[in-house]
Length: 326
Ligand code: ES4
Ligand code: ZN
Image (cartoon, rainbow, N blue to C red; front, side, top):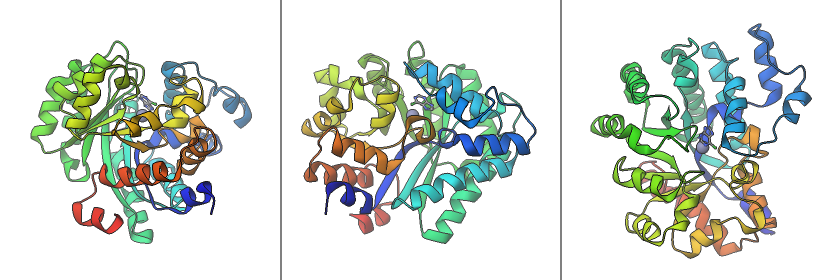
């Protein structure tokens, strides 16, 4: 079979996925209409035409606009269920999903409304298909650490439903050190910790994620490759990198899929994985990301196997479930 067919058939994990980034324009318009809220774009095509980004912030501006039509628990359920249906059809067997509570509480949507809808869809997918999951609450780094602490407080009644915490949104100008205290509080609660680092930000931000946030994983990590000592430290700590090829291309983190750094990461012995980040905005889900790597970046069968395996070992699923998949 071709490598593309193999990549589609193999069981996969998704470790870097923002649920608000799975909001397809068609569904966005349908939910906007049902909630009687206006979008800034008149048609699905006009919205899609706007998906041309030169950097992370260009994308984030549209991402926050898009999620603003989500009002009710049913909206969060429908959004999450549509994503899970899609990736179930792609043989994704385990998902670790970020949600951005502050993107919703800031506009008056209570924390419980969000998490109840998302969780119910995840539980339904588990019952229907045996799909396993972890739920990761992510703090918006362009907001204050106080706001992150407030979010953690609102999450307190739901901590049993939350497996880990992350850090996302505008990276440059908002280094991990800004959030050292709130991540310490999260670790003390037994939550796993990850952070977006080295997507646009310099290697020093990745060092901060390691030494001040004590991450269990690194989201993106591309710019870590600029620092040999940092590469050695990431290997020493056996940290997984959740790499997002199509995202990197759309946000101009890489110029060309032909020289995406993921092969170099593997060659260096780093635990890179393939993920889709915000698939509705970046032009593809899990299988599209693999296909782009196979057809453009020319990854071979061994690399494909290693990437899929890293997705199991680098996940936060329990060890017994890992052994089933390995
Ligand atoms: C994100 Cl690609 C990316 N980077 C940082 N923050 C994000 N939030 C959603 N997608
Ligand atoms: Zn991301």
